Length: 343
Image (tube, rainbow, N blue to C red; front, side, top):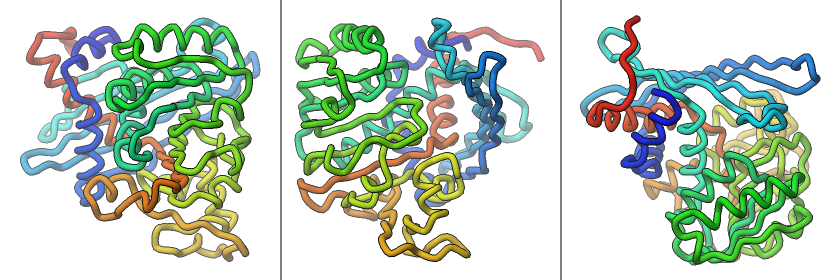
């Protein structure tokens, strides 16, 4: 299935529901989630590039859903006028292990990422979130805006900041054309702090490698959906009232992400309250409170008060892509979408 095929088949798929069901299965131990394979390099023009290969499987009451996502990216691609990321999602037959579907990965990847944020907002945002701040205005911001306007009916303000003012304006134009876009006030600001100020939901979707969001930027009650790697400072994590991840093992073992580095440094403890093996806790530490799946099924109560500052820091699990791809494939088969490949 091409990207156009995937988008067409996904029109009738509830992506948020698919992601929620997968998170519940994962929380109940009905998943297989190996480590991702990561290959990074520098392009001839000096840009950072990488290739990820991420297998995963889910077991329902009736069958197993097995697949592999590969996603590749170069940070210089937007300057070429093409998306930063591209790849494939592969679904495998449970009995024969043969490929049953091959589809463009970037659309599903972006939408399931946005679906995790939508679920976090549903379960962890303040009672009636009204203002959402987007830091970075590329493809992921558009995916988030599409889902959040649909799933958070109380939203009435979208604030955006991007180092490229033109990209920010293009994003606002996109927002205004969305279903529900007519009910929100959409504006661009000229700085990250001004973008965050007053927001109930903060969505960083950038490529920065050094944190800049400080604790005093966030008003009481803010939910930060920390989608990209390094927008928060360590101080912001330490000051948070609640820290939620999608999978602690993946976050813990990734030295490229803030929470993984904090665990290695002894400033972040796991959900069990334990430091990393061989690492002494620092004088000031923060403990990861729960996984999002635990909150969805009610194993953890989530936000304790309307004034809590909450951080949702997902790793981005392959099982979510596989779950969404499975539903997209079922829809495509029923509607005759896609082309048959003879292997």
